[in-house]
Picture 1 (tube, one colour):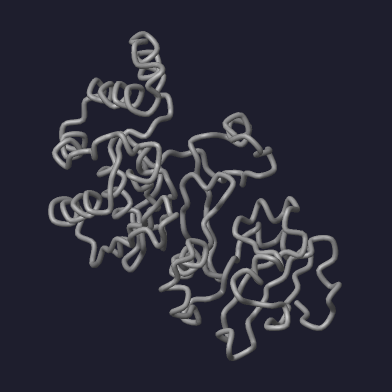
Picture 2 (cartoon, rainbow, N blue to C red):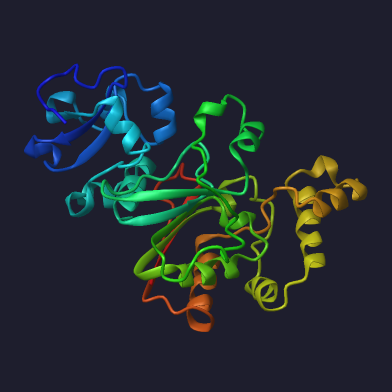
Length: 320
């Protein structure tokens, strides 16, 4: 890499930017793109244009530019996001900006990890880290499930076709971290996913979950999933019980379809993608505590509430 030639990056126009001005927390890194909407940028996830940096109180004059060549980017497989680690300042940790807070969480993810459902927005990780992407859908299927405005090249290609509901393909003590954003609510048996993640993680490994906050999403009309129900799903799983989730979903989230029992049953039979469960920070913390006492003993677990009034998610972090 070179910090001297502003054209060194060639066509990619991507660079690592290191804050050098003391007033801007020297040692903090960003991964940036001058052409924010290029394909590489979309594949990498959290990249920042000059305008975004400026909106966070930074200017390009505050940074030393460490450019990457296209070859270096290809070799890194669009990884190596944020080499912040211990350099990550309290400004990020205590920020009410969801983007900056997400970057701080990403700086905790070090080593070889597994991310479920990265979609078009893979989670940022420390510079020395690498995420294996897993998804229940192939790249072709992901394109078909794109939201309005998304294109095929918005998605990262999964390395593994796998669902977080079944981690049997992964060996014990094999990953330094597991991360899943807005995935746990799509699982009929979330306790099993957490317990199995404990098995798969190395000692000192982290499980990081981004969980939609019930009262701030389209789940707001639903009741929180009772802990007793979640325990039943884990200890006495019954596929027929899942039908109640579909009835609740189509009654309270998509009420226009309430009276179509045949449609609801068909959705249940084909495992149509819904939010099986809904949580607030308080009810998810109850789940975490119960798992830790009864099924998998993590050395530490913590919930990070919504960081701002506009945030729709909270984070749950488990340390093995």
